[in-house]
Image (cartoon, each protein chain N blue to C red):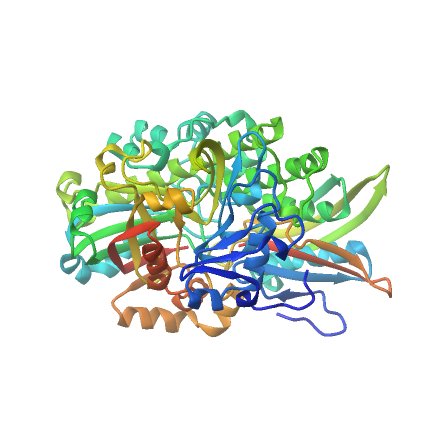
Length: 149
Length: 487
């Protein structure tokens, strides 16, 4: 489940009942995109999916960690209600204005087709447990998420 | 987080062979000690995080007696799975983190007049039929399209609504915890998003550890109580394990955000943000409780509708009518829920919000909340095994009221992660191994079998034995699986 060492987008960590992962990026936007990719890959191998359908997402949150949780939760909601399994993500921008964090992003995927898509698990929800958003000494971003499966 | 991860054994103090305490000195802010109800062996295998999470819960305002972990406890997020905690109605809190995302995930058992010997030769066909009749798995579509008003009714009246709509018989309601619905439910506290997620999934089993199982009574420990429950050796039973689906997940998600703000508003300091909470009687706390109750009712309605389809499938398959098949509901328990209950604490009767996250109610003989037909022997306590391992029916005791706020464990508890399971237990191999033991498994594909493989769980026998030895519930029968359908 690990990508190439230099360009590692995300990695899974041990969790007994659920799924825990770290996602990386040279920008906060990229780390958020990779977190979404990590979450959908808990459920399905996204490399075989096509970016056919687009959903635009806008979220405002009191803090950056909650913004991350809400971004992922919104994607889960669209997955269940619109029936789209997402495979590509583009975060236009994350910004802080007047003490509030907001993001605008896009997600692409294809309608769920059980004859072709093999789901290994279902992510039920994004938890706030051990939720982290960090920037390292070299300026790179790292986020950590535990999702309920 | 502690720098050095110590063994559970070096942190806890022994109370007796099945009871161990986490001292209040373990973590700053603990208001009561932690209490683990485990054997020496289960303690040795306990993850450090389970201990940590039990201690975290002990810091919450208004907690009574102990922050408890049942014998099957393992680490989760917020509360440990297998966590039980009661909070004073007036000085305590209520927390979605103490209930979890799958509100009223639960289990029910339906009896039959069929014998294992007559069902076994046709098991494969029967499981195939059940797999097709009861939608399961990611993205599965329900057979019914609930209207907006039906959804509201399910939120309000749970299994009662389902029965009144033709999915079952009146006795079913009497044989559910809370008579199949919590009266506190208020659908107006449920968001549009939760409705949108819940609507298409109403009447589906879901995925993960949810399943439908055909079992038989392998061993009877207590003939008298078994008779009261309508169980006898060699008899076939059906177990349904599922919850409130996307509706419950979204309700939890919505209120975590609201209570996260409330935590700051009321100046509550938390060791884990997932424990977001509000004073129990505050508007935020009560709004969550009313929405949670609606989610719980959705789950009872869901299990009731599925029960109806199971009965229909059996009637058609065996060409015998319902009465002849004797498919009565024995009982239905919730194992992810918060309840306002009366308990005796330090000799005084008190109203408390008991949070059971991956724990089952286990009420004693004579309790008014135990159905009249079972009142002499206590509530049926249903403990499912994992795929391929036995499940148990126990009965409630007075001891549980004394020790665990009338609670027992909810399953066997994980020892290994899902990802690890996929590496270690190849699905098709497990399917063959189980087949050799006479257990038919039908799943959407083999990796679904791998992640719920028997080897990823603690031994259900061992967990149930601790419950029995402690006396918080007593063994009545052991049920062995014959066929499993899961998504």
